[in-house]
Image (tube, rainbow, N blue to C red; front, side, top):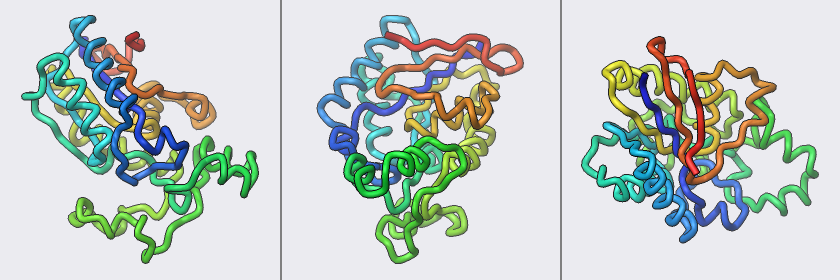
Length: 229
């Protein structure tokens, strides 16, 4: 039996302000820091720890791992950061207040952008500062891979290669793995692990700062899934 820990970052400042965040890089709120610490305390109370951690390159995921790891004295374990674990890129919605966007475009349109599987948000242009090519942390990434705005389907398409290339080999080595990432990148992985359909995944919601545990069988398919707390 192999253990996989999925942890959505704690509340960010933009979560608190009800803004579309995507690949923007706001810090954790005070509540988010508390959630991350609480996640570590929960792992400790259930005697769960990890041998390696994977995060996105966004600070809210990175810091969530650090706060949680400190609670169980695992700051020393190896960490791999990969942009493919980033949140879904919300395109031209990124930075906008969700309530104001709903007032402008209507609830049905915003729901379609947020909760559908294959509908992209309005795209940013190459000149827009929200286009990732302007960010130094993506300077080594092929421009053809950098999004102007993603659907959940697009997010799945980058997360699963990351899983197969980097994460799965560590699990096959019998290592206990934690992934500290984001609502949509983790939903993409949950969809893959549980072989969910596009219609099923739209109803999946992963709460902030609450460890989701998978116990994987000898075939590395989920045998048990549960939240801590």
